[in-house]
Image 1 (cartoon, rainbow, N blue to C red):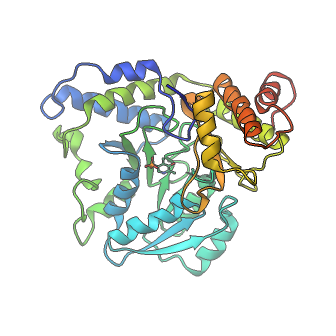
Image 2 (cartoon, rainbow, N blue to C red):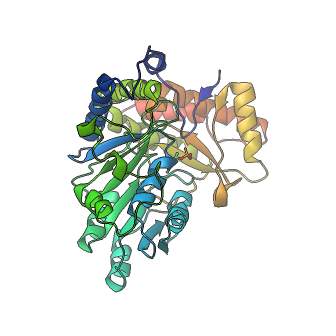
Image 3 (tube, rainbow, N blue to C red):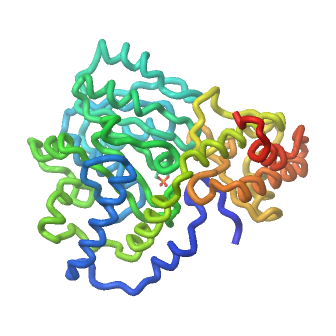
Length: 382
Ligand SMILES: *Cc1c(COP(=O)(O)O)cnc(C)c1O
């Protein structure tokens, strides 16, 4: 098997794989499972720094995004879609599907949203039921400052929906302090469990907004409202993917024990960016890279697919290209969750140096060596 250095899914700890192969009971009938599920939700809430309820949904990360929009949107609702990336813009589709009217706030994809400029926009137009914003928009790797964006939106009485699927656990998240009504997460990013589960935290205000709808939620599977009383009633709207949740529970436990996690993501990503630049390569972003992924422009005359193929076939390391408007333009180096470790990242960078050499681009240094030098000498890795 290759080393999976993609920006999700990531490599998974053996104990997570083992937890998924545990014997299991009937999650519909056996209320012990409800207790276990509730415990994982509670632990996730602690890690996300919130008093809000957390619900784990049986579906991949996208389900969390769609469920938030399905549950909040009523026909005719105006929704502010903050768009400085592919996932950011994608929220408009969910809003439309559920009859809402998305209003795009589109800014340059090469840098984070500027909260001051968003304020100027909101001063003129703030009649929105809720707003969507992506924390780390993975195709470009941009990190938006949700710590200022969400409180600003709340000043105008706008509910906040944050896609932090590719940032949480690799970046700081403080749901309550930052006034996030619904945060969306997934199992396969920095949490480092296999793909298959999504989760959300839902504020009381967001839940009340769902309860006070004039029209029913236009979905069953995507409704967050149906989860509201699951614990009281010991009832799930559908049979929970119990083995996946056992795996998730172990991944959550490991994340909780890893006290150096956020710092390590920052150290490693700063050193990756510096090594990439010293090699003579360019980053996609002007500034504002997330610590979970580095997005590098493909050197002229080389194809992203070739880089990915040689990396995989000759060096046994899987990296990723990008998609939508970034397709073909960049390669993406993942260093989130379990992948945020010095050894694997150094190997990836040395292999990339060799791969580019094979394809006709001479790096000015061995990126792996520069990376290690930055981490293991007193020189600050910034
Ligand atoms: C991965 C990811 C998701 C989940 O969707 P995928 O189907 O795994 O692409 C949602 N939002 C962001 C920002 C992601 O990186």
